[in-house]
Image (tube, rainbow, N blue to C red; front, side, top):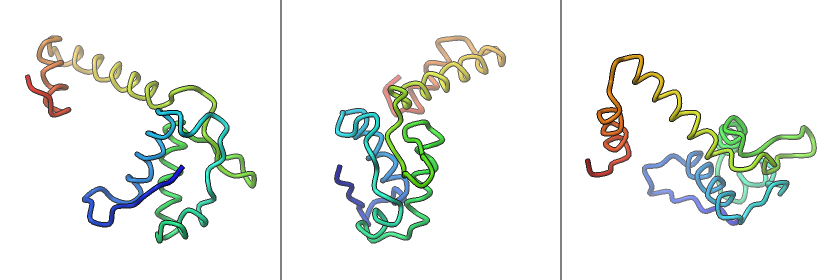
Length: 120
């Protein structure tokens, strides 16, 4: 896996790392159980502060994309597509909230389409 940070991007470096790792998991470039570089090593390779990489790893761990095993390091989680699972949970929470506010399904879907930047 090769990560590249675009210094001209409006996306913060920690988010660029997070998105690239998620994409590598989705495409199979990173498989469950694959070991990630240490925070310090990746920070050095990318020319970033270790805290930036650590923030990415914490977000990936919270999203269940990776798991940290103490001194052994960080690994791609073996729990399947955690991103898909998180999106499904978010969709279910959104649907429940929209119902509780009395928003009908068509309007709720239109709001989601607008949020995703899709045509109505």
